Amino acid sequence: MKYVVLVPDGAADYRLEELGGKTPLQVAKKPNMDFIAKNGITGTAKTVPDGMKPGSDVANLSLLGYNPKKYYTGRGPLEAANMNVYLEEDEVAFRCNLVTASGDVLVDYSAGYVSNEEAKILIQALNEKFESKELRFYPGMSYRHLMVTKGNYSRTSCIPPHDITGQSIKENLPKGENSSFLSELMVSSRKILENHQVNIRRKKQEKNLANMIWLWGQGIAPSMPTFYEKYGLNGGVISAVDLIKGIGRCIGLKVIDVPGATGYFDTDYLAKGNYALNALKELDFIFIHVEAPDEAGHIGDIEAKIEAIEQFDDKVVGTLREELKGSEHKILVVPDHLTPISIRTHVSDPVPFAIYQAGVEPDEVEVFDEFAVRSGSFQIDEGYRLMDLFVKS
Image (cartoon, rainbow, N blue to C red; front, side):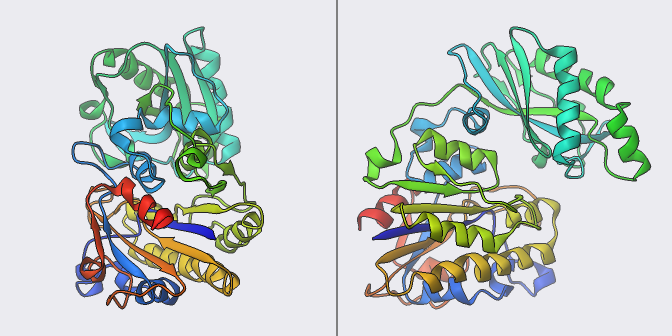
């Protein structure tokens, strides 16, 4: 038996007036996801426990079968795992965004999707200024980077930058224990980055500047059982995002890098599908994550979100469906969380899911969307139990 989990990040949404009271998932042409819903079992799963922030870190831990309330320590250490950054017991990893600041306003959480090459130069400049035995920066991809430092930040509140686009920087700086150090570092970074040659060039090109860092998602190194120990399956993960790959490494999944996988709208959907098929020749389980619908949700682009859902359905879901015909397999389609266009950030609402396995009696749901599945077979209050249903049932 082969097990395939397909995750269109943030694809689920709220009804939109611009779409006649429908969601992007309802409007999008998605014959493959609809097939899985019509011929499988469906329902909803609450991937973000009450009291926890609705991040992709928490939600994807749930999807992989790990109770976030038990295992979650922060987003930073999960990304550190994929970047091969080892954390000492007294070290804390922060996610470090390069952002665009103008006056007191955070204009763009992604700094205009600054290139990897430009970002690396800017992170190196920060290291030259701030690196010490207790502080260092690590370059990642585009606007997503890492800072590691020492200290206790368990009671420090840091807001993700994608939650405060267009809002005051001063009002949203870190708060609580040891927050002043972080705030001073973030403000100081602007003095270094603002007039860097990279940003002088970007300004001439009329691009958003990568002129400040934003620190959030802090945590210590997590300790979790492997996926094989939990489910007896050798598995792999495909994603362009350090967070997802980092979770995979933490639980012993093979990280499969796909050329052309960018984490944005231009990602190579078909390559992800084909690399997954190739991996399944050796592995029992594959987890495929596509970031594009989430990115569209964060910038409030309805058409881009619909397009991302359709590309995901055609080139990822469709490719796996077609090539796995005739073999024993299960397919689970499930967003990790909602990223509604109307509010441009994550929410904790239950997500829709559909599971297909040949020969299994389907329920009465006809299509895959946020509302149809509410009459499905399962409404799972603890989202991490969805993996048990998928693998063991």
